Image 1 (cartoon, one colour):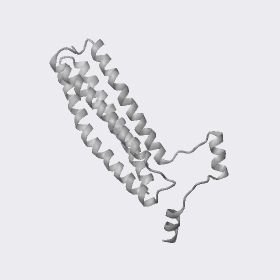
Image 2: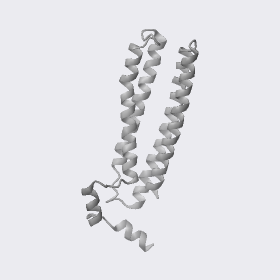
Image 3: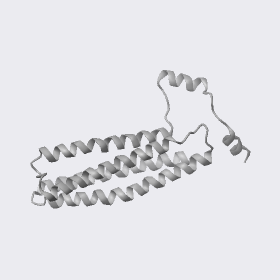
Image 4: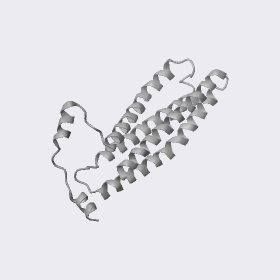
Length: 179
């Protein structure tokens, strides 16, 4: 109990000589919090990049006639999906930025980490069915092209594998932060 109280009451205003040398030499170690924030920022930027990329693909591609009513709504659903994903990731990025490891107690950091972990999982519960629905819609729109359907399915499976791996990394960093 004494160690826990000392830890919670300690504030690290100064850095050690080795930490200073690491900063100067460029060997700065990132905490789990830094890694989480960086990962959310990266995911948000990728989502924002997908918005003009999808629009250009739809306008320039011969695959989808953008002026057809069904295809317009399809493109709009994808654009809203990536906009929502970017906003959610940025919200998590800024929320984790409010955690200050130097001034907050271990209990406060742990509670906030668990809060943002819970929000992350809730966002997945919103975005995953939405993405699967739009992918299904894309398959429906291109059902006459066998190779396109196979490409969509392969892309979806690859995306799921990458997403599961990223989720495991997120959860590992949240565990490190909340412990």
